[in-house]
Length: 163
Image (cartoon, rainbow, N blue to C red; front, side, top):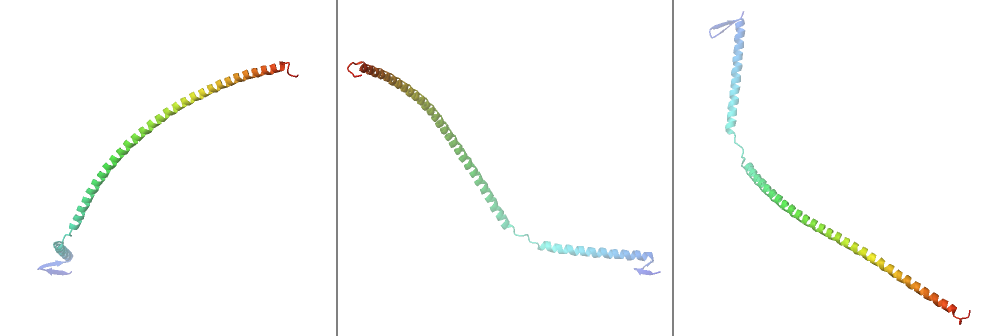
């Protein structure tokens, strides 16, 4: 059986295995603690050397962009109001033109009705005059035929004519 003496204490058999395991665990913990401390020290050094980037240029650009957005909103509002005013003016003009067209159409319709009435009356008057003229011509022709017939008869009845 093997014996190991450490600090006046003798370890034999199974105890020795437990001591070696405990010593190796203790060594591993000590090494892990050293590495952790070393990483902490390196990180502390990096943090102390850290210089924040200069964001003033970005802040200036953000300020300029904010100003441009405000200007764009103002311009958009102005354009909107101008367009609204223009649309209202156009609507007013369209209403006025529609009323003029309606009034003109009403006048044209009234004039066409008057022209149609005058045309019908004129046509009726012309027909009536033509009938009167035809009647006079017919009457005159009948008189003329009668007179001519009488003259022919008188000429035939005349003993001086050689028959």
